[in-house]
Image (cartoon, rainbow, N blue to C red; front, side, top):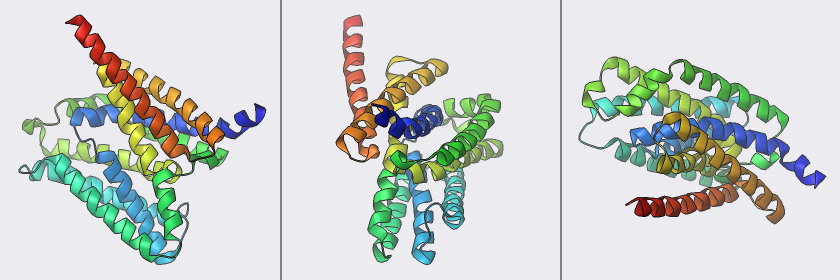
Length: 276
């Protein structure tokens, strides 16, 4: 038993810090109805990292890989903020989906050509949270804490834009700037998180807990707490299952989150039918 706790302590706190920040961002994403923005930005960070690997064969943790990854997320953030105002004929979600597909194809193409790309591809998808150290946890706390403080200070601005995201009267220059800051801050979090958790974990942490909370609650603070609690339960179950079954944490956490959401959806449906 002592061995299990020693093994999962750091991965647990790393995952906990991720669910705290992504649980918050997920509520905004659902309000804006841009579900695939997370996986698109994650893929943008991944293609930046893949490009650095393709050219210099550097590790994901190198400053070159981080620079390329964050650079691509900044460009994508500017693009998404710009297209929401300038391109009205196509839904924003369609633009995000197309950019994700192109970025994913580009990343897989480069990794397929590079030596050792298959290993890099697997890490890009599933990450390696189980092997995270105290240094990784410290960086997580600093990055997520900084972004969380920024969003708390300007929480009313971000919340107002998310509530009125599809209101064309909100599409002014100032709103475009705040939209860009939202994407950049999310991209900043994703850039580091993808290296640890992989695209799969990052996407499930962002979308599923927020969806779970939306089934039962409307108030933002209550939804945030519900998302965090759901995530914590899934993290504990995923870590134990991953340790016991000796397989990747990414698929494990995704399976637990999906199971929780399925059970919650059945309960919510029955509750609504009973009320009627």
